[in-house]
Length: 91
Image (cartoon, rainbow, N blue to C red):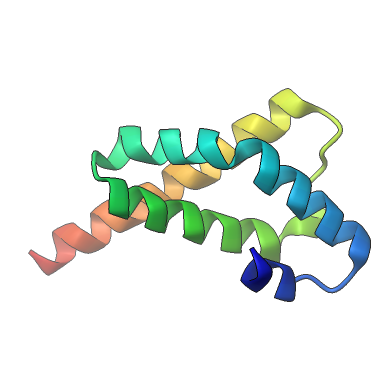
């Protein structure tokens, strides 16, 4: 998690990221596993999703938990689809 926090400049944004990380990391992993059917690729998708979240943390609101959950799942699924596309390209 320290790598992600190094991408964030203010303490308020770091606290927001830590909240997302602690509350949604397993949900994100589950969503990626459903999409990819591979544990290691799912972990890669979640890592890429967290990097995207860290880069755009100022645009994310944590007030509505249902919206936030949907957002992190959508980001994770999109990263999983990107991984699938990359793998198909190399085949």
